[in-house]
Image (cartoon, rainbow over all chains, first blue to last red; front, side, top):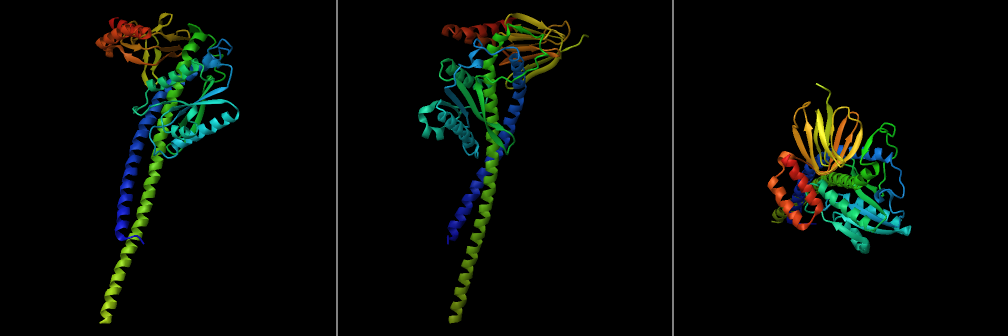
Length: 291
Length: 125
C-alpha cells in the first residue's frame, strides 16, 4: 500500500502533466488553424499549375527528346525516397506512420533488387532508419529553424532533388508525406515526383488554338522543376497541418487519460486516508475499553 | 466602357491580386505583350520584370508588380499569372537592390545580376 504522502505527490505530478498536455493541445489547435489557412492560400497556385501541366501534357508526346524530368532516365534501378516528417515529436503516430510507409516501400524495392537512397526532410523519421539502414541515407534537410514553411524552403528541397537527379544519382524519386484529411485522420501518402506523372487527358479540344510562347517543349522544360517545387511545397504544407492535427488529437487523449488517472489516484488516496482514520479510532476505543 | 479582363496574380503562398482590369502588360520571354479583353488564348513564360496593370481603359498603369520569373496563361475569360515571387514595385528598396547588385557583380553571379538589373529597370521606368 503506497503511503498517503507518496500518493499525494503522484496526484500533483499527474496534475502538472495534465496542465502541460492541455496547453500543448491548445497550442496545436491554434497552429493547426494557421497551417490550414496556409494550405488553403496555396491552393489556387497548385490548381492553376496542375491545369497548365495537364493542357501541356495533352500537346506533348513523351519521347526520348523530352526533358529528363518527364521522360526519366529510361531505367528504374536506383530509387530515391524523399521522406518528409516533422522536427518535433509528441505528435501521436504522425512520424511513425510516415516512416512505416517509407520502410514498407523500401523493403519492397530492396526485395526487387533495386538500389534505394533515402533523403529526409525533418529529422523525426530519420531515427528509425539511422539504426538499420545508415548506409542508404544520402542527406537530411534541417527544418528546425523554419517556423512557417515558405515556398523558398520547398524550392530549396526541390532544387536539391533535381541537382541529384541531374548528377545521375537516381532514376526514380518518391515523396512521402502525410495527407491532411481532418484533425482526426491523416493519411501517409506516397507520390512519385520523378519522372513526373502527368495528369492524363487534359481538355485537348478546348485549347487547340492556344498559342505557346516560346514553344510547348521549352515551356514544359521550364515548368517541370517549378511543378516539382509546387508538389514539395504542397507536401510540406499538408505535413504541417497533419502534424498539428495529430498532435492535437494525441494531446487531447493524453489530457483525458491524465484526468482518469487523477480520479483513480484520488479514490485510492481517500480510501487510504479513511482506513488510517478508522485504524486510529479502533486503537483509541480498544485502548479505552482495556482500562 | 469596354468589357474588362479577369486578372489574377497568384504566388505559391497566396493569391496576390484578383481584379477586373482594362489591360495588363506582361514581360514575356520573347518580348513584352499587352493583354486586353478578348485576347487569343496563349501561354508564355515570363522573364524577370514588371507587369503593369491598367485598371481604366486607356488610362495610365495603376499598379505595377515585379515578377521574378513565372508563367502567364491567357484564356478566353482572362489572364492568370503564376509568379514564384511578386513584389509591388513601390515596395522595392532601391538602395538594397543596388548593394545586392554590386555584391552579385563581385561574385560574378550572372543570374542574380540579370534579376537585379531587371529590378532596377522596373523601378526607374
